[in-house]
Length: 104
Image 1: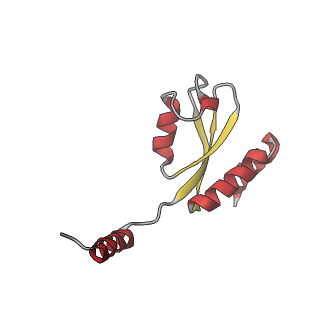
Image 2: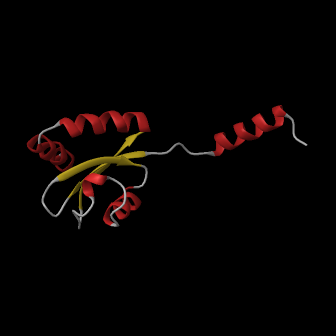
Image 3: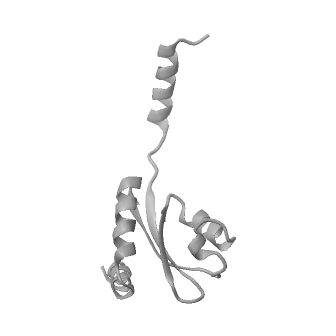
């Protein structure tokens, strides 16, 4: 039988071994040319989910999808804040944002 102290020690040990997740911002283009911005810890898996018609309602039936851009952001909080900012940009500003990674 384990005590509460042993349980919390075990959890502490597990959390020490757990790597923090790296979050990514990604942009995909629909077959209609529209851009969708999202965040995830696994871009490849998330894109496959979108391609299968699952995930964001905004992308259902709009495939095939083309991955336009991805880059690591850090933690979930930073990724969410950046996603919000990028989603507010006009298409031209999003294109400039993506281009800045290719030239920089």
